[in-house]
Length: 257
Image (cartoon, rainbow, N blue to C red; front, side, top):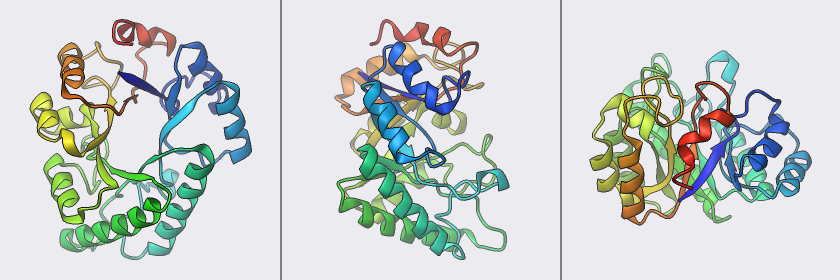
C-alpha cells in the first residue's frame, strides 16, 4: 500500500515549507496537502525535487477560509470566483505534477434552496471536470461530516454517490475518508467494498478525535486488510492531527509500509 502524508495536518511543529524535508526524513516518498496557494510554484517545485517527493493530491482554492468559506462550488452568485479557483488549481497541479484535485463543495448559502444548491454544485463540478480532463486530472468529491463542518453541502455518502452517477464523467471520482464516513454513518468496510469502483483516493484518521489510527474506535487492522484484498491501487492519505508529535504518530504505520 502507498501511504501519502498530508503536510497540512502533520509536521505542523515546523513551517509549511520545512515539512517537505520532515516527510522525507520520516521515510515518505508521497505527500499531499490542502491549500498550497500561499507559496510560489518555484519554491514548491524546489522542495519536492530536493526531497525526492511526489505530491499526490491537493484541494482547489476554497474561497476565503478565514471568513468561513469551505469551497465555492455551491453558490450561484460566486461562479466567477469558482472559475478562477479552477484555473488556479490547474496551474498549480500542472507545475507540481498533481493528478488528483479535491474540489470542496461549500457551505449552503442563506436563502438558497437545497435543490438549487445541488443543481449549482453539479453544474460547477461538471465544468471543472471538463477543464481538468484536458490535462489528465481527476476531480474528487468528498463527503465531510456535519459535526466538524456545519452547513457543508456534501455530508452524506449516499448523496455523493448519487451525484457521481448523475454527472457520469470518468474523471470525477470519490475521495473516501474513513474518519468522515464513520462520523456520519459507519459500516466502513461494507461502504468501502460496495463503492470501490468509484473510489480514487482514501484518507484515514481515527474517530472521534481525528488522531492517527489506533487512538480511537476504528479497527484499522481490519480496514487495511480489506483495502489490500480489494485490489485498490491508489494512495492512502494520512490526514489526521497527531495525538502527540508527528514522528511519534507513525508507530502504527511500521507493519503496513
